[in-house]
Image (cartoon, rainbow, N blue to C red):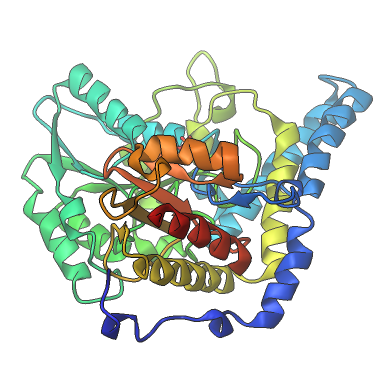
Length: 422
Ligand SMILES: Cc1ncc(COP(=O)(O)O)c(C=O)c1O
């Protein structure tokens, strides 16, 4: 529990502006998954919900290709136009040029492209934080095996109470820099930690790493669609993300930003016709993000991503949506702190949509509270229609708060958690 003094800046419901809550209900009615009665959805960090217009566009576009004639010139031109428009929309969200964007299927592919793009030599070192996603660690371990690279981990988890705006964010950078060695070639870490919701100071990290000629690759699975981004200004080299989480687009669409200045220092591993201009038998490469793309993709999905982004922008700008996410997460965090049997993993107000907490089994007397967090999350889904995720490290439950989350959703989750006391 936090002390009452530290909850004096408690953001109550007025801060969230009641008019916008009414707006929100009208807006939410466009998302079929949010219209299901008595369902409370807190898994945006796993997968977002898709609006009806985006869902409809998927079927419409598959039909459209059939009607134009599969593999016709007209269908080809239509698909290329979808591709260009989609890159342009993604680039606009990140405030970068479309030539810096590689379209992918998910975050992990983008992280793989970044990790394998380096000309690794035996004895080089790769630095990760101790909060990275298993898929990214697996990729690092393969690189270790293939090239004889050493992996170092820095204990980002030990700073999980550092806030990104505060002075303690310097301690995150200092800790990272302490773990750089003369042969470190790349640092890979998440912009928002998937397990705690901690936000790391990107620009300060990029500056510190570049001062030592170290590439900075960012796993943005939990930040794209949450934090307002101006990637050129952040100075990071790679920024990999998916659109199916916070952007509420279909599964299977993601992207990777690559800083133009490093383009000549990296190479793709998987290649194909999408990266070529022409000139076989000697391949001529496109000098943009497409060099890292491979071949045919599910172009009929692309419009759904653009519709998803347009819907979010219709509700409010990215800064306004981020502000709402932070406000709501803070409301949830404060309410959780008022429950004696709940322990929030972070002791500072959230700066992202991820709020992780543990149930103290000694203080929570109900039978279900005696089970593991994984079983509690399954029970909540099956019995209460509350969707919330369990994590292994730290062993906890994680609620993902989106701008689409309502205050009523938060009340429902908190009431259910409160009921675990007896
Ligand atoms: C930090 C982080 N990285 C990577 C992933 C994997 O994402 P994807 O399925 O888009 O590759 C996740 C998914 O939860 C994540 O939270």
